Length: 523
Image (cartoon, rainbow, N blue to C red; front, side):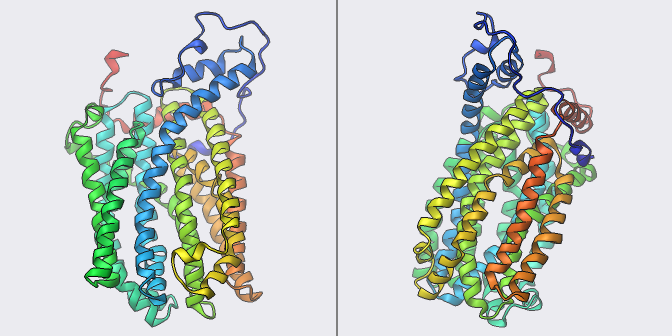
């Protein structure tokens, strides 16, 4: 089971034990190998970390150089992909916001209050591909990656059908949740145009994880960057020139996501880099679906509880007095937070790939060291961004709307936004580690307790009982995130990574369908 690997154990030996021998490196030492090659470095990294005859300071320096190059190779394009894809949604909200305050509130509610529910579910279910493909690639079981991709796509497409029905009934659902009829009507119009986007998600996330598991991330970055340029042009034409309003803006967003999906799939079937991992469509994709669904469900629950958490903040804010102002100010902050969050999601992907690859390859120390480096790097970047956001607090809202009242409200919420960004520099990265290890079920339990038993009730208490409004709701939910982050840190750094290697081997043997590894005879 996915949760079985989550029993925290202390490392049997320190990650970088001090060396007893201070002699220089022997000429044949694997540590003297070239560290410039971003591929196949896992074995060298493991050798460095276990070479006790080398001074620990030198091992730390050399290991950090290798790991940083691997992470930058993975994280930089991944950050671009996630930020550019989020920019498409963000720009759609901006185009809608300049139509008026009602349109801004409607697009915000539709985009961050409803659409993100589908995004979280689909991305979460796609994390099963991230775990299995990453570990299979590390173990050189390349042919199984294409099978996992197809299985996940089948399940996600089927999941998209009930989601489309929910989108169709978004107006009465929003009214039932307490939103004003005027905002609910406008938001539902926006949501109708996002129905095709659901199925684009269903294809995109398995494809994305399939490529990331192989450290193929640059093509997705190029595709996403080119697509956002097309998206901006089409959005301008639809909203301002053709006068299609909210529906036109959301339909263009759906079209843009399908462009990304088609372009990535064309790359997979034509690229030589995927010739071993994509061997065509297979009937084997339809076998083992119930078991695959279990892992996908655990992944979805883990990420949905996390992704939906701050979107619930937007829905709760709609119940406050003067809901339009609360929604406008919070939506601006949440949009900025979501965009910056894409940096952490990029590091999340890098952490998941690095950890799953190293576990699949049987390198426990490399997996543990990768966790330390990626967490530290993401945290430093998030602190820098938080400081910049605080310095620009009085100007942020003018990107989205010209209203002075909204600008003042956003400025007051900016300190909470900065705290959220800093926490998001740690928590998503550790969630990526959890995906790489297959701990999705365990993290789901943590998320339920911290987010929904502590964070939301505390936020409601502060917001309504103590009349702190949006500030109180957000403060309480930050408390839940802080507790969750502490738990993930404690569990991650007490993990027995040798045991995780054994669990990865068992998982791959279970999911391989008794098929011989493609390159087994070459090892």
